[in-house]
Amino acid sequence: MIARTGRRVRRFSLASFAAAGFVVLALGGSPSAAAQETLAASCQPTENIFNGATGDNLFAQPFTSQLSGDLTRAELRLRNLSGTGDWIFQIRTAQPSISIPGDLEPTPTVLASATVPDASVPDGTDSTESVVFPNPAAVVAGGSYALSVTRPTATDPNSLAVSSHTPSTECPQRTYSSNNGGMNWGSQNLDTIFRVFVTPSTPVAPVTTVKKKCQKKKHKRSVESAKKKCKKKKKK
Image (cartoon, rainbow, N blue to C red):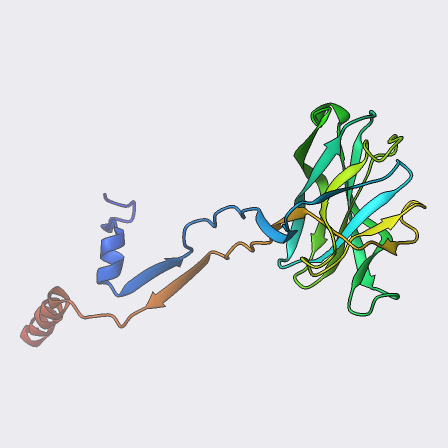
């Protein structure tokens, strides 16, 4: 291609830049895979009792999260032999127990809440129910929390009953109950069977472009041209 000034313009490819001593390095690996939901805490002893109460009660199982991220899902095994009404799962903060040294107990502070519709829990049987929190609680590894459950319309212990193990010997923390909306809690000599899942935080690696300039090499053609110019000057 000839430019308007009469000078010849060369097209440079990536290969020609490399030959001229310029190397362009793009450091930005493949996009990070989406974070996977991971088990963050659980209590899975042998079930030998269902802990039941009426709808003015809550049951809560404290735990320590093993992961940092959003607590997106929880599982409990429920017994629904009578009554109607939705179940409410909540994630609460927990604190060192005042009455039992070394234990954790739930607090009134609710971090996340989700509803399990009555229609999704089979009547007249036991079933493991999984609930996803629409606005998950942000938890940290080593932090103290509690999973609570209630069914406000429950009229007898068979309509609000949660799978458990007694005595409380199988899990790091014991179950607590409240009959005033979670303002105060009392310990129970049993463990609630549960699982909670966290979607860990995964920072995206930045994409960095690095330009490296190498030392230019003299081409043979340039050396020959310089020699010809010198010869012409001598002749003059």
